[in-house]
Image (cartoon, rainbow over all chains, first blue to last red; front, top):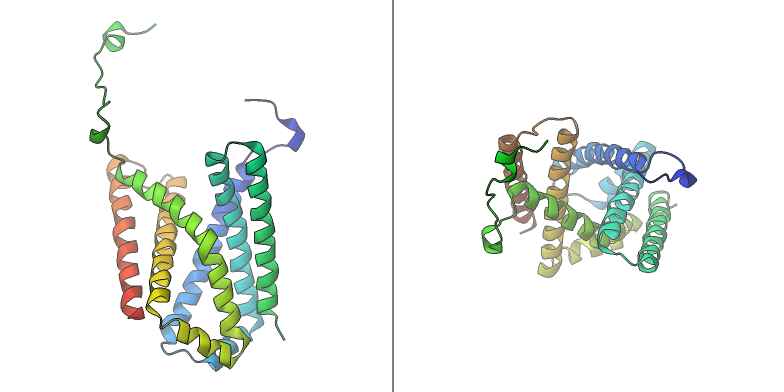
Length: 115
Length: 131
């Protein structure tokens, strides 16, 4: 293996683990929301807003979305590394993905904690 | 030292490309990637916009419900539902493979088919719920 000490250890293990941990988090939260939807067949606005008035639901939702954005970063980066060979184009696309995901994270917080 | 009986063996060379077929686990794998890319590009912004509209006000909630009654929107939701179901089920299979569960060829083919079938059935359920 090429000696790449400049960025430190791991070389992908951290991303590999992040992808799997966030996947399990999303699976669990998905089950919670699936249970909610299955028990609220004809959902009304009051029930839906009432559900999100609980701090625990907001935190669980934020946990889901932050997991989603971290998971998406690992996956999309893998795709870009596989198919986009010119370094400049790949870097530009990676920066665009990072900006999009960070913006999504801020949007999520503003949705969940709107007054 | 190389075994001459192996090195001189006539190996089948399948250069007739139409005879080479992507095995079922390979199909599941590429669909996992495709569904992931689709969800990054479409599902994330759509999901956030929908969550935003559903929680903003009574009016935006009803407006969202009205938009969901459109046939084109239903098709998009159905497609995204398939992407989510396939990606999640194939993902569970990968997590099990990480734990060395179901890695022999027969089992991995069976579970790959199961991923395709069950994600199709879940998508069908969503279609029934939508229409």
